[in-house]
Image 1 (tube, rainbow, N blue to C red):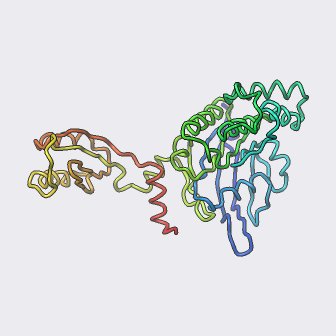
Image 2 (image 1 turned 90 degrees about the vertical axis):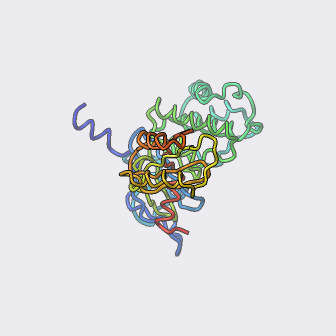
Image 3 (image 1 turned 120 degrees about the horizontal axis):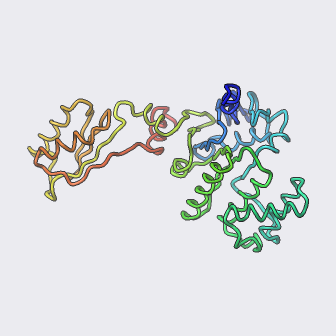
Length: 331
């Protein structure tokens, strides 16, 4: 690949520069800077009212920023909102269809609105309905659709104009757990196979963690952290990024103040890299600066107390989120 081609490939598809939105004395989005590259699935994570939806509206040119810029696919969304809409597919949290029309009819109608002929729109609608796993419901009126079916049809609706970017605003609200899993898997598959850039706005930590390449933690209009899970974890928990959890005692209840338990705790604390040790009945947690699973296992086995199980805990998005709240003293 030529150097110029590589630079173009790495050029951000979405670039927000000092993006700010104020309503009277309330700042909904506060000097937001963010870059999202081609093909990424980026999770914009934050509680309700954090400013996620306002950010999306500015990216789509549906509301003007008080200051700053939102560039999408190299287009200033405020100056050229129509051009942005041609490149971006948007699925709001409550997508609407004509209840008295079938899924196929709704989708074909959208295709015609996007300047396809009637035959082209119908054929493309059929392909997309199959793509999102809705073939069996294509002839059913959407007024009878479940929430999960509506969202799948909404995703097909988003794809009908061949977008470069898709923006999903709380897309899994009201969907049952199995439907959520299937919907998220569909998003990942479409992104990888079609090369789509996806911005997923949500307040559901676990869902974002399952599918996103990177996340941005958004609170009170501010992006307080941004990166992949491992990078954020390393930054926050640099002193003790690993927790080794060991089940001990060979079925014999241990008192943490017993001589054998105290002796084991002292030995573990003497190990280089161990920062702290906690007992809870027959489970011991060892906080470490590095992965010391093998060394800890040898120590416990050598202590004759007995090792029943050993596992390594990795910090997830929930831990990271709570830690940032703690550090930022956000209320």
